[in-house]
Amino acid sequence: MSLRLPPPTSCRWMGYASSCVRRAKEAKRHFTCFSNPSSSLPNRNASISNGFPLPGGLEDQMVGYIFGRRRATDVAHSVWKHVVREGDTVVDATCGNGHDTLALVKLVAGESGRGRVYGMDIQEDALRSTSCFLGQSLSTQEMELVKLLPMCHSKLAEIDPDDASVRLVAFNLGYLPGGDKAITTKSETTRLALEAAGSIIEPGGLISTVVYVGHPNGREEFETVQAFASGLSTENWVCCKLQMLNRPLAPVLIFMFKR
Image (cartoon, rainbow, N blue to C red):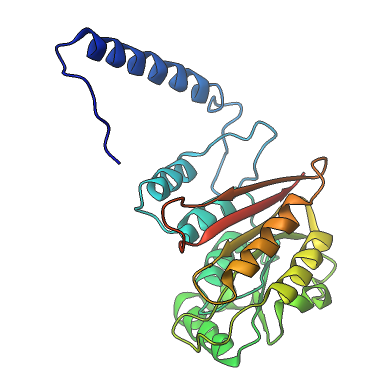
């Protein structure tokens, strides 16, 4: 998109420039009030405070996404960093080739050794791919934090998290990259998985979804996820959607944060 601006010598241009400078200063003051030392996040694993500050890393990913330089999964991973803490229990409900699983392990791993990542997938090929990828990327100690389960994400409620609360459930929906595109997640099972996730997630936790609308079942699944998020109580949940308007087949991010 291009902006047609008046000539730089005109009064209209000077007024426009003055307005831009004024708005930039106002925006800077606005964001500064959320980034003072008392409200800033102490580390990359800190949870979001009541003030909802916008950490620098997340801001960079968001701006990159808006300008088409970052993927939807990049934004999702950056959001997770400000929800998941060392020692947390999290679930990758559709582990695929393991990239989301790896990101989650790096967030929960620490000296305590109490973190846990459950990775689920209905396809054996996906679990083998994830296991191989994690084996090449993680230490022996980090691998001990991972439990891979050959099950559909609709069976999420059957996971036994060792009496620990679940901090985050991540969904990367659609088909397995590099696999059989005819095998995809379905709106019916995804709805069941979301309901289960909502029941096990702890306050301050997050349900993160990346929905791909480009495959035959994608649009219906997106509408299912969107309807689920829209129906959650405003007293207990904060839900948002990030969607490209002029790229109808681009993946859609839907976050559901439990108060």
